[in-house]
Length: 292
Figure 1 (spheres, rainbow, N blue to C red):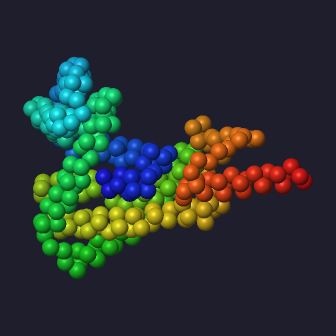
Figure 2: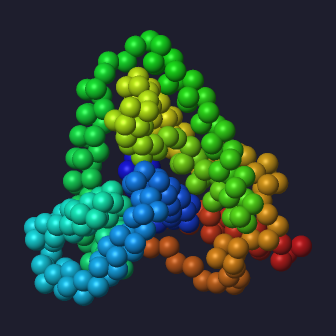
Figure 3: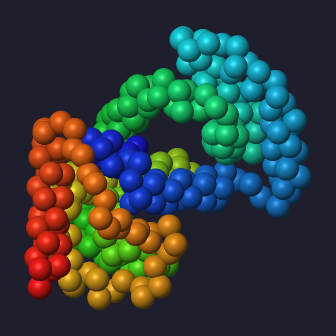
């Protein structure tokens, strides 16, 4: 959620690197929920049956979403679907978190999914604050725990390097790899949920919950400050980062610049002035090239 906030504030949530970062986080959550949902082999049939039941009744809840309108009933329908999926999976002995996740995956294909997500966004922030508040009230941090959290933050550059190298090996552009790796260079709040689960099971002491909470908070502070100048950082390191770029770029990352095109800039605000200056500079460079 915090990474989505950073991308929203910078207006880059729908960019290539923004979608890549969110896709990575969604897959991490899916694997984490699957691992910690107590879905043993004996529950495989129940998992399939529950999922098939959700698919079977899809026309019913799709019709409900079509008829509830755009107000409070739409928000209420979102809560009913989430809690309904949770209780359905709990009924057959499977962790309810996975049920809510499966419901969300099916609702994503509905034409009202974007509107529903926007309506529930306020509650997302409220629940996130409540979760961190609950963690903060569990135990007071000590100097030793704070030092341990800071030591964990020293591993953040390693995470950045691993993500960047993985993205470049997957034939992503250096710019996309750098920006996505930078915004992902922090500890996920889902990791904090996993630590809380391990503490509740008695596998870890409560001190680790405090350590992870502080490390998570420190990492988001570092990422938020670092990402504000991310584009300037890339431009200064562009030549070095291009060295790691794969020679074969993905088809969706291949952009053909039009030549001899007429351009009109409407509105000379901050973006308009930058666009005008860029096109004017490119035009002068092309004229000089033709003159030579």
